[in-house]
Image (cartoon, rainbow, N blue to C red; front, top):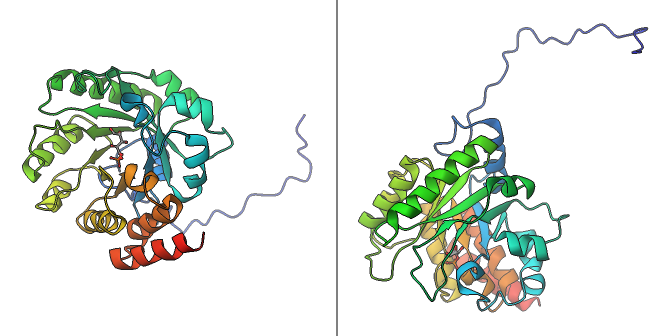
Length: 293
Ligand code: R5P
């Protein structure tokens, strides 16, 4: 039985102090439920509003990509410098220690390899498994203009519905066919469709002309993929321009893990994304850290 003797009288009511009702820091996310917001606040740093997602999910359609042959040896050492790890459940269960507390974005679509039509995907992870894996978001590929456009959009909307039931946000990844124009008009179309249909944030590519129009008319946060390996200064410049033009972070893979010094590179990217460091200063930082080896 509870001990009721000597119970202190409650008195700190602060009756004159209105309870704070904070708006949520992330674009377009204020009306989401608590669990969704909490998961997004693990992915996006609430101080800077931005994220460095380390993308290592490439194996789901292209096998052991250069730099990802041994995720245990070459990627796990980068984890302390990332805000989020984006990967498949196979790699998560087989290689990543559960004691690692970094938020996970799970690759939740798949179904075709580089040998076939890539847009022919399905949902590849049940939402129950995402819950079991304690992920912070689920990523689905969307092929606007692709051969299986409707199917990929339907994958996204089903995943969003399942995620809403579980309180897990969905990241829509806009995939561009090799024969399609990568311009502002296309990316406005692709990102806006994903957001209109309920994606909680969208991944797309940076473009030199008109990227700010892509971010400004997308009502939820945008992160950029790194794309093919570039010289380090060029990759840092791309990340810098994207952040200055309204992106809320990067979901970067090859430009980090294929760098000559991945640990130095991810820290330099972090300086650009979280502290608005200029590409030149971040590149200097990269070289300094690289030479400390
Ligand atoms: C590609 O479909 C994968 O989802 C990657 O996560 C994405 O492309 C980002 O990686 P990268 O920076 O290497 O382009």
